[in-house]
Image 1: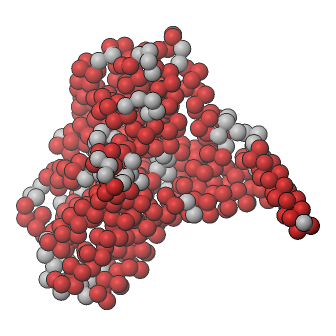
Image 2 (image 1 turned 180 degrees about the vertical axis):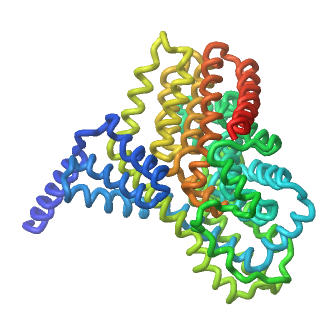
Length: 528
């Protein structure tokens, strides 16, 4: 009896302490200050060109704001809730495992001679620099299943080809990044489509996603801009420096080679193109199977529904693990890589991905800081306050800008979807279906735009890893291109808000994109 009473008292104390912890609200909660930590980190990274310390400074500032400048609480929040909390999150760990396995497979493909053989084959069939870049874009569009998978796969396949034709690593990173999220967000069968449909409560999510595609201006214009930049040989901003240096043989421009150790492996002269193509195909097949497995496809759920309900982290992790096993067996049978040599690639592949893992860990921790400061609640209130009759036609443009800013500051598209899409559905559902479609598209486009530009975005980090490019170089060279498309997209959303028609707004924006790029390129030549 006495023991039961003591246990009851202890549980009551724990419950009381838990309630107090749950009731704790920092003074800066749900204010503009919630967005300051990521902004500081981003600005510092662009100024200092040093991403690790910049991200950590942002994390510490977030911890200080959350703890109301109490030292002990700051330290505990930064390390326990931030870094340890991010690394112990199952979704994040699944992505890290997937990243490591991809690093191992890329190392194996290099050592088996598959990458070198493909590079030699491509040099015989792809004759020009434009052709190499268009092939990269095409592969990026084809691999639309998931942005993480896209970034690392396209990078590992196309690096030898673009290196052969002296394409700057920063340009390759841009092409990879611009065919990742922008393609996934308009692909009906992708992890991104699954995420969006899950946020549209009370409506047919998949139908709305399909209707929103013609209004997803940023994604569509980014793809158009890529092709125009490559075919028109357009180069401006910091990318011009990288392009000019690449023509002279310097693919990096800066001295930093964060992923260079994978290029120093001795390769097997017996390797063939099959030694690269087969693992890639196996990887694609198993990752698709892994994703639909998590969506319970094998329990009787339809293919599209299974994709909609899939868990990308678990699916990609399981798929890549099985692909790795099959690849090890394949290389052993082909006698281009022994089991012992394959195992030797495990630590090498892991080491090659350490920079990406470090940046991802800090980026996730920084996001945890902004979440604890109520950034989502602040932005949600801001959007709702703008939804009045006088601004009704400007709502898509406003939502696009808010989505850009939020995704840029937090580094997450999916989190931005989760905040803005339910608000849009709540405002327009049952009253103005067309405006709901346009505004949901603006949510998606703004989120992808901010994600595309942000140095702390996991997709941007993956693109740097895929291209084996210095991360800050990738961000700084990509920004002018992304901002150009973002400005045109915002103007196009204003047109769409008034016309309510994609048939009018989409062609206007597309023409404006092409014309603007050629004008910027011509002005750059005149200034030079």
